[in-house]
Length: 521
Ligand SMILES: [Zn+2]
Picture 1: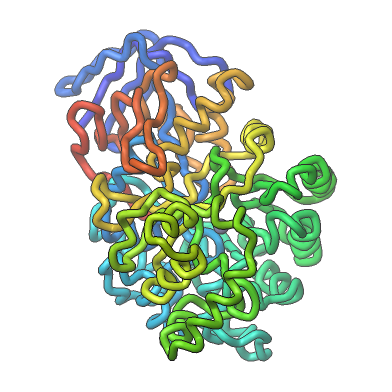
Picture 2 (picture 1 turned 90 degrees about the vertical axis):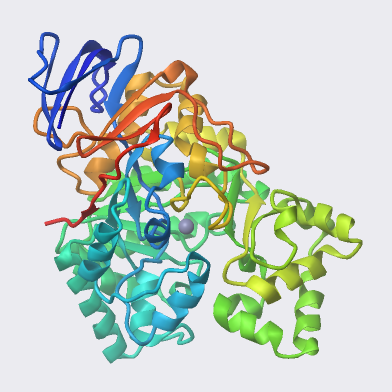
């Protein structure tokens, strides 16, 4: 199978100025580029006149770990130009799985209807390949998954033996080709770890020269301390690559901390550390509704909490009482995105204050009821970011774009996405178009994340590179997805190639699913 894409404005992903030319694809690779290429016999010629051709986007922050098995067409991703996803973020990877975490992960991902039959990175990868994903998947090994494999979800301090076990499991995953280590220090059980535990994980990672991607312990009230913890853990363990996940200043009272955060990053970068980040271009974040829970419930994982709140009316009442302490403003800024709780999906996209008004009850009661039915699955958007800071962070030379979303089908059969699941890349372009040249925006979505995550043969248009490509119209690249109708595909994309085959085109939708699971060597 070969293609000749003619007369397109070719932007190669390195940041160099684009120019009009032709690109020849043969098999899964780019065969050649240049102004005078001829079609080889049997190749399909595509007229790219008036359009831009660039490398496929690399989603630096994906949560498609299980959804790629349930919805391998990855419609929300490929339709916005993503050809490779970095999964396993925020400490949560789908491997390694053993008797300590299997049941929990199965419950956590219940809505996807996928049976977790594998244990290792390699076996997980084989399962992905068996389902023919539309996009390439590279996965980080998650600290929370590792810790649960070593010690379950409730243990606060690890024994020496447990620490050794999780180091060995990390080492095995990295040897098999995992992209690096991720942490999610806001979530159970990663939040129980201290800096010393992280250092012992990073000592293993340092030997592989792969990134440590961290969802910081705090993204708001203790943001600077959290950045300092990540930097000092890397320095103490010889780890050279630090990648900050969805960099942000969360909560209005922390918006003024961006300069201090960037100074801390600059100081670390001036030393021996290579610091990068990703971000999504929206002011609303999305995570489990259970993250709203105050003490003492914030130390329970979702599965344990659901058991607790279902064990007697007094438990339910106690949770309601704690939630009732939030000021009304809290419920005006928290929006339900998706849940399996009976009758609640009708309210997807609206705030808890609005749901409570429609149901003629209190917002904390609605919240507790949803948690009782679906603590592990209910997803919520929290409004807490400054539009100016989002734009400044997105424009930084070391930030890539990440969707922070899982691969979604076109319909809502696997729940509803944050609009970023269909629109992060076009919104990233729209946000930066007055600030940065197109070539630089494209670099931040292609060769930058490729170099961060060790993808040597992707993220560039060059002879010999994998033919992951997008033909699109940057002037009309935009996203109509919002919280009311999040699964609407991006506008302005003409065609997307993955490993040399056309995976998506705006007229003809999905044609081939030719993505692969990637193991690093
Ligand atoms: Zn995260």
